[in-house]
Length: 174
Image (cartoon, rainbow, N blue to C red; front, side, top):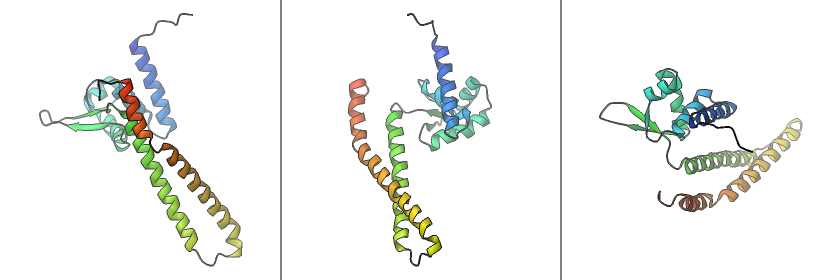
């Protein structure tokens, strides 16, 4: 069965639509997804104005939303001295950046869980009417701690494994 002809422009539009919906489902503005999709296909850093022109929105809207991507380490800003514009790009290894950001996020959550469990251990004089709530809450935190320990243990070494795999995929890059 032969698939209908599709152009690269159609594919980019489909990626943009998908990214827009995906980012929106994660609580971001749909524009964040469109910017990310645009940057994915950009072979070189892009200015705010270039993004605004391509996406048909204001430069101010792009400026606000691109900071969200930057904050979440999904793009980087390159200031230039020759034209006073800021340019944005996605690193060649966005997959590693994403992996590292997610591992750091899980470690921060794990630390907060451990801190909370430490406080549970320091509590004194739990009232009888609070006991069932206390026990349920503590049990849930213990379960969360076990789950995050399992996540992080399984992810241990994944960064190196990905680096080696990427070298196999694109040996000329490394």
